Figure (cartoon, rainbow, N blue to C red):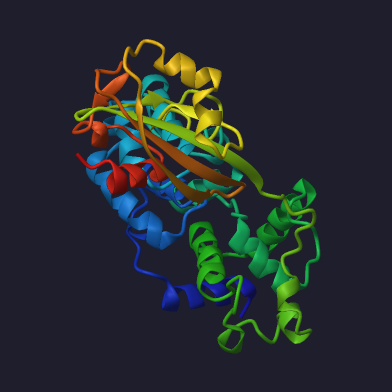
Length: 345
């Protein structure tokens, strides 16, 4: 039995029962693939169900506004994905009469869609012989064939694409791609792979050489950037100051408290900052400092050391929203958690 037939036989016996595997609708496959970028299946599945319940078709999504979509996406992270979905849906409806692109070359032109997503959609929905390459595939194939190439290099990506196109043989490309991804997720895992029960163990170079941990090769690992975020939380009995994050940075277009970035440990350092002075200059009564809450939030490439400097005001504050309405604003999960724990009205 050749590689592709053997892999698909395993897939048919072991695949998880997932809703996006029961459809060829490119819209639904697109939503699933975007949600599962940088997100594990068990985390992404509830979002997929909620998203399609709210926006069952591409046309429904095209009628949404950004605030609604981001609120639905809240907690999933990588919020640019949601913004790109919305913008692409509007573009497809406007320029293509609502018809989802039907081939790889057109799908990859959609905002936020890369080679992996375009390959998945075009193969699953349209049977195009395009192969997917992601972290699971890099790991599985590099171990199996003993490929010691730096997966951060574009040349390595092209090498794997060409190798997989050779391996695909005469099987359905969509099934082949889903089998590849599933095998990497369930069998050839990053830590403690199930080598003893692996159908390829006697062919696997990494297994026979007892060198599983060496694959895939990734040189010059990116160091996580440390940042220090000081949120100025100013509230009255009923309202709280909130602003939209517009910088080209993490959490763009989500809502947060006024921010002072930098490593500050003392209250005096915060209240003497120009940004704090400008923030409070229209108030006639001094703010009352109540507490500082410290937390740490980990992103894929950043470590965020966060302090919430909490103040109360006896007079109305501008740029504020009702505490009852805060739930309707899309926020980073760390902001949402703080509000739930410390600012419940």
